[in-house]
Length: 453
Ligand code: 5AD
Ligand code: SF4
Image (cartoon, protein in one colour):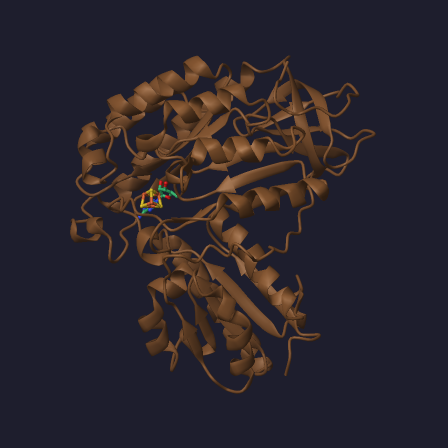
C-alpha cells in the first residue's frame, strides 16, 4: 500500500514548537502522497503530536487515546500513531501498555527527531508491524523539509531544536534532546520563499533562541538577516532566556523596524532561592536589570513571561516575592502554571511538598493579579491607534475581524474593505484584560508594521 489517496488526521498538543513540528510532519507525509484531513471519521491514519511538559497535558492525551481506541474497534484498519514528547518520554511504558489499556490502540511511536521515518513506519504498520522510533539526534534540524502550512499569513520557522539548560523542573531536555541550530542559509532561504508566497509575519522558534549559533553567527545576526529579507514582513521570536538576553540582541530589536517590539522572557519565580533550586542561572536582580535595559532601549516594548507556582519547598514568602516582582515589572501578559513534577528531572527528586490546595490558592492569586495588570495596561491604550495585521474574520462575531498589534495584543475590529494580510490602522475604543477592541478602522495602506502611532 502506498501513501496515494490515504488520509492523515493529525492532532497537535502543547507549545508552538509542536505546532511547527506538525507542519513538518505533514510536509514529510505530503511528499509521500498522503493527504491531510480535518475529519477524523475519514482518516486512514490518526496521529497525535503530544506534549509532556505538565501532567495535565499527558492526561488529556490519554483521554484522547481512549477515544481513538473505540474508533479502531469500529474500524480496525486505521493506524494510530503517538508522536512527539510523550512518545519519547513514555516509550517503554507505552510499549508495555500496548497489550492492554489505552496503549493498545497505538501502532507506532515516534519521537521528535525521527519524523523522517514516519512514511516507512506507517507502511509497516499496514503490514501488521508495531513500530517505534525514539532515537534522539545531535544533528537533526529537518533543514531540507518544507513544512506544509495551512495559515497563509503567519508562519513559524524552527531555528533550533532541543535544550541544554536543564532547568530542574523541565522535561524538555529529556524529550527533545540536545540543543542544535539549523543552518542560517536554510532559514533565510525559507524566509525568502515565504516572502514570495505573500506571508506577512514570521515567528522564529526555539526553546532558547538566544543560544542560536551557526559558525560565527549568533541570534542577533540571524534575526537581522531574516528581517532584512522583506521589510514588509513582521518578525517575532520565542523563547528567550534571561541569562542570554544580550545587549546586542536588544539593540537589533530596537534598531530594526520590522522586528516586533515584543519579548517573551520567562521569569518562573520572583524568589532567588527558588530560582536557584530551579537551576535558572540568574537571580531577580539580573532579571530586573535586563528588563530595565529593554524598557530603556525599546520604548513601548510589550513583555510577557512564564510563572510556575508551587515549586518544591516554595513558602508563602517566596510566593509573595513572585507577587511583588509581577507588581514591579507589570508584564503585559503571562502564562501561569502550577508546578507539575516530571519524571527524570532534577526537581523530581525534591519533595513535591506544596499541598494542592495551596498551589491552587497561589496560582489563582497570581492569575488575578496578572489579569488586573493586563487590564490596566490595556485601558491605558484606549484612544491610541495601532497597526494591526488583519488575520481574518473573528470566530465569535462574523461582522468583526481579528489581528494582532506589533506588541502581540489581540485586536477585534469592525469589518471593512480589506484582505487578510493587510496592515490596518485601528483606534482602540474599549478593552478587557485579554483583548483590545478597535473601531472604526481608518483605511490605510500597507505598512511595515514596525511603528504604531
Ligand atoms: N511544571 C509546571 N510548569 C512547567 N513549565 C515547564 N515545566 C513545568 C513543570 N514541570 C512551564 C515553564 C516553561 C513553560 C513552557 O512551561 O514556565 O517556561
Ligand atoms: Fe525547559 Fe528550561 Fe530548556 Fe525552557 S530553558 S525548555 S524551561 S529546560
